[in-house]
Image 1 (spheres, rainbow over the protein chains, first blue to last red):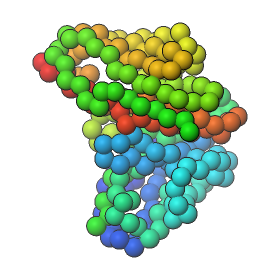
Image 2: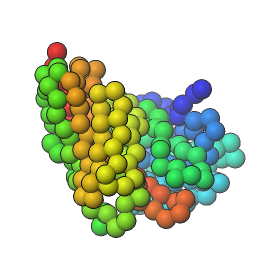
Image 3: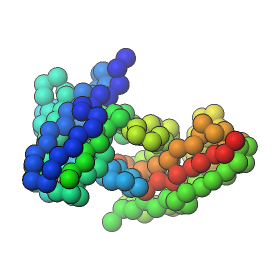
Image 4: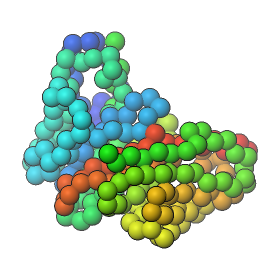
Length: 114
Length: 112
């Protein structure tokens, strides 16, 4: 049973560029959440997608956007990259309805902005 | 605002030396408290969920407990393979819309 898969694993971009990160949820899961983890910090919630709609959003600017596809996979897009966007981006999946909070995380995409 | 504070930031133990990690929190209505383990370069791995004060859960050398203001992760006779960052998180939200608010974690190093 494949877990949560993310691609690419590493990415290097320059300031001002745009990036797209991809996530496939664990089999049987229909909800995808994205988190940003800066070095030495805990993950911070970006947003959550369910039924192809953004259901909840954290304190991130509109430069961060996402999408969920009918097969439940998801993309995270970041426009106008800043140096401060350098971080590990984690995708987590879960199944609804339930208490649902047991999130399964992927190994993340390490984004470096130069 | 709901907050999660973990202590200590880092902890070094000798193999077999038991200890505890602390997670203190402030939240308006606890929905769930979670413990995750994170190895370098990996995503967090789920360990436990606790829902109400007095609840305890165990897995191998780990035991998580919960009070109204804090949670402890007790590590009994740790081994080097227990070395990792341990993250505590609160669940927030309404209905089926939720998110996890994480602490900064405790970096545990167990020396052989």
